[in-house]
Image (cartoon, rainbow, N blue to C red; front, side, top):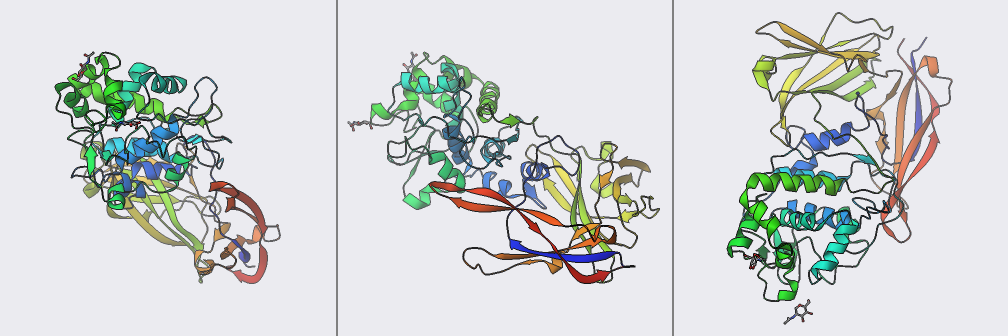
Length: 488
Ligand SMILES: *[C@@H]1O[C@H](CO)[C@@H](O)[C@H](O)[C@H]1NC(C)=O
Ligand SMILES: *[C@@H]1O[C@H](CO)[C@@H](O)[C@H](O)[C@H]1NC(C)=O
């Protein structure tokens, strides 16, 4: 009696969708947590390279201000009363759940020296239409700007502080290439500005335009209150404060509009500046349409497993490979010294009996989080003959004999071995035919289920008329049983 039969499906490739929920492994927000937590080091994610490069020499290399600007342009479409518009409330897929702009703001702030952990909530986006157009323009009178901010739920003091916070970073490229929160004429009143920009990575406009960057303050890469200090003591060189044409000195007009009260307060103390800005950034990134449900703030996870390989090999053994991420920030005092820590896995068999042999891991490196977190990585690969249904993670401190078992909040870490994706036997065609690439997926199915129909939900990107954003389309595809059988 063979244990597995193989089935194959041929389809065009698309990414999988995720769902919304609170944390237990595996979770639909594992990916978002990785992007948020793994900024530098081993297995670091893209966000670290792209945003944490805050720049060192005058802002030219920094992408952090772009994230603030794009997020602001998106947020200011929010209509608080009507519950429409707001951050990432764009007419594209229901599935934009990681809210990249919100994450970009949080990352830009910490990358440029911000020390406060701004709550970041991922969300379920149901928005089907964009919010009001109308990014404030730099020649707008203060009252018109204030109206736009008020509609988004921000009062005059908020408006001044938010501008001072946003313009703490970066600058403006020459007279015609505004890098600030307010817009140039030719870019403004264009509904899809933020959408288009969000589709690309923030980029270095200086190279593109070959123009000199005029910084908003003398520390364009430091998230600090120097903009306010320089504005008040008359040393500011900001093109939006002391520009030649008074009509476009929008920051000067805004900052003076409450008799300088807000600017005096933030100039007086970096701590006041930091706490006010973080409060506003948090409100800004949570300004979403009422149809959006936001999660609790994301927190870095203490112990997190990753399965990197789970398939049937030619010898009919299950290859079980992966890594365990362990938060080691607190170090030896809490038994988390990577030089004095053994990480092992206990697993069950297919009959759900715990095996007495623990699976060893090897420490392979560290990763670093947004606020000084350190994660140590432990990798494993083993061959399993008798199946697996779940595992636990055992941490032992050799020097003290202290042992702790992590069991996923009492659930254990589940593993499904009766349906395995055969990575090495599956492929995606290198060349596209009629704009689509052919994908062949092979899975092994336990004998127990071999006669049941097997289907795959495939989610595919599709272009849409009149929108730069592609939509996601789900198709259901049936697998065909092959004649191959493995195992006994
Ligand atoms: C606000 O500060 C600016 C810059 O120092 C100054 O020019 C202006 O007169 C001040 N306005 C008020 C009302 O104090
Ligand atoms: C100042 O800027 C405004 C708005 O862009 C423009 O209409 C005006 O002509 C400019 N004035 C001068 C003197 O350049």
